[in-house]
Amino acid sequence: SQKIEQNSEALNIQEGKTATLTCNYTNYSPAYLQWYRQDPGRGPVFLLLIRENEKEKRKERLKVTFDTTLKQSLFHITASQPADSATYLCARSGAGSYQLTFGKGTKLSVIP
Amino acid sequence: NAGVTQTPKFRVLKTGQSMTLLCAQDMNHEYMYWYRQDPGMGLRLIHYSVGEGTTAKGEVPDGYNVSRLKKQNFLLGLESAAPSQTSVYFCAGGQGSTEAFFGQGTRLTVV
Image 1 (cartoon, rainbow over the protein chains, first blue to last red):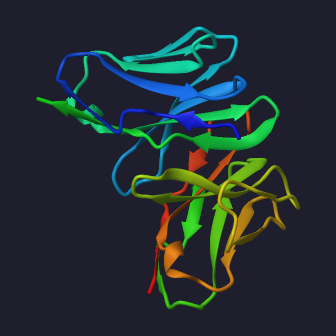
Image 2 (cartoon, chains in turn green, cyan):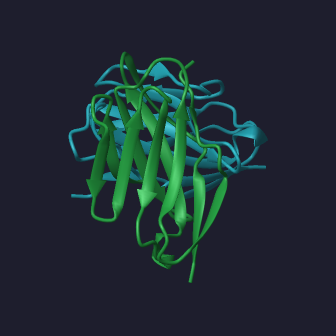
C-alpha cells in the first residue's frame, strides 16, 4: 500500500523562527503531495500542492519541497507566529491512485 | 456557494442502530471522499468516488456502505452501528489532481 508518514507528532517552536515539518512516503512517488492545516474541531484546509516534477513551491511565508530521491517533502513556515499553531497534514495523490491518503499530522505550537 | 456541507453535525446512536451521513457539494467536484478521524490515527479513508455512480473502498471500509447516485451527493451508511465506529467523520470533494475541500465534520458517538 502507498503510505505517507509524518514522524513528528508535535513540534514546539519560538515565535519568529522557521518551522520545518517532514513528510515521508513509501513505494513509488506520488504525482502530487499536498499540505493542509487543521484547527481543533474543524475540517482540514488546503495550503499548498507540489507536483512530482517540481522541486519547490512557495506561497507567502510557506514553502514546500519535494525530494524524490529521499522520498520526502518538507514544509516550512518562516517568521512563525502564534496564529500558525495548528495541526499540519501531508497527503499524497495521483500516479495511478485515485485515493487521497493522509499522514497522521504534526501538531505545531508557536510559543510567543 | 456553500462548498461541502455535512449533515448532521452531531449524532448519538445506540449499538445496532443504522444511520446515513449526507455530504453535499456545490463545487462540481468529480471526486468525493469519506474519512474518519480518531486520536492518534489521523484521517483514514473509508470509501471514495471518482464520479457519479461510482464508489470504491478505501483503507477502512468494513461496516460502512456508500452511494453516489447524484454527482453532488455522497452518502455514508452505517447499517448496524458499533462502539468502534465512534469517531469524527469528514467528507471532502476535489478533482483528484488538485486540492480537496472538506466539510465541517460529523461527530458520531455510538453507545
